[in-house]
Amino acid sequence: MESIKASVLKNRNDAPNEGKFIEGMNNLIEKEGDGVCQAFFKLFTDLDFPPYTARKNWFDIIEQRESLSFYLGRDIALFAVVLDYLSSSHYSFKNSMILEFDTFEKVLRDSRHDNLTGLLHRASFWEVLNSNIALAKRHNAELTILFIDVDDFKIFNDTYGHQAGDKALAAIADVIRKESRSGDVPIRYGGEEFVIILPNTSEQSALVLAERIRQNIEGLVLSIDSHPRSFTISGGLASYPGDAPDGYLLLNMADRALYQAKARGKNNIALFADEKQRSYPRRKLVRPIKIKKIGLDSTLPLAGVSKDICMGGMLFKAAYSLDVGSHIEVNIPVLNKEPLFLIGSVVRVKPEKKGGYDIGMAISFKEMEKAAKNEITSFMTLQQLAGKGSKRRQVAKSTTNIVEM
Image (cartoon, rainbow, N blue to C red; front, side, top):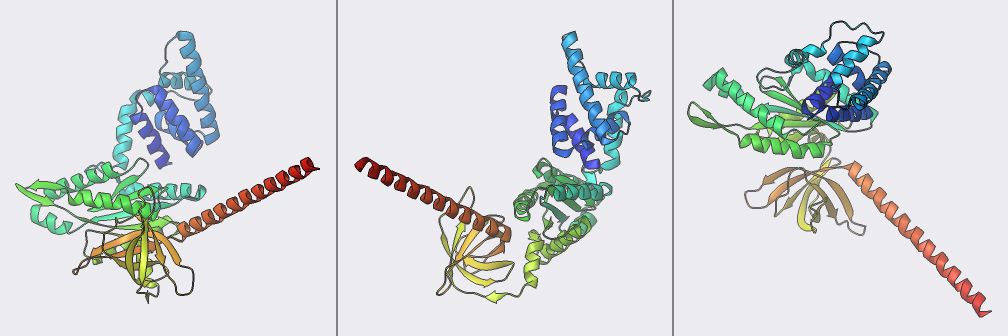
């Protein structure tokens, strides 16, 4: 319910006029259901209607507003209609919270947001995470969380003091907020730790966003005691339902990935999927391979050399770098057999001292399954078209025979 309330409030604050607010409400209702109407009345009137009753009241109010606006020849304020509707109905509605909405909104915001950063605070985390996981489960969608920790922050705090530390955390939180997409939920989890809930987002897509946040924070420079100071972060990613079946385990998996990022030397993002690869038995595999970047910026196949492979991914060497998070297809020749095609995402790029790059790839069996289905669909379509062409030739031949007779 809290996440739906937050969506209603955001719609109210972002809408340039009441018409757009109503339009936004209707879109939310279509997407999230009658709970949006229930949240609206709870927020603005403190009346707790059952979802179906709240929906009926909402659309009755919208209809009443349209009728009044038509007869009076001007738009009637929505909340004036809400007050009139509820006051004239059988509901007990004496003390209107509508008249004190700004104060109410501030109290609501202060109770759920961190004063220093303006982000949601830890007390809101579990309710928001569990409600988003419930939505992901209902719609058979993915959800990823990014767990962030500011590197060496305790040393900075001890050296420059808490005021400087607060200034740094506020600036870092501002980067996180600006880089988060609409629908993402950034939260200050505690101290120098942040969590971003990313609905409808795969681990690989989240990695692209996480890398952008990491790079922008690395480029952030603050003046502390007249000296420039910069910061880095480490992050861990884990996804529902692939890595964990519930919120508690999901956070734990992201935390484990974060510690892996710290162990790698900090200032990087680790996937929990990458950690899982470490538990798979790896086999040395040295042979020429072809790497192709797929997607909107697809490229021609480029050469590389595989190093080792496991069920979770592959490590290979290339003369060029690839973007972390980019989707690639790897063609591995197999003696006396058809080539092996792997599809996945780049999760690690490390320059070698002698030149070239070590590149880690996480295999996506979901993408490989999709590619296989597309191949089968294309094959069946071609066969169907070929069959129709054969029938047309037979009909044409029969018609020619009839004409000849």
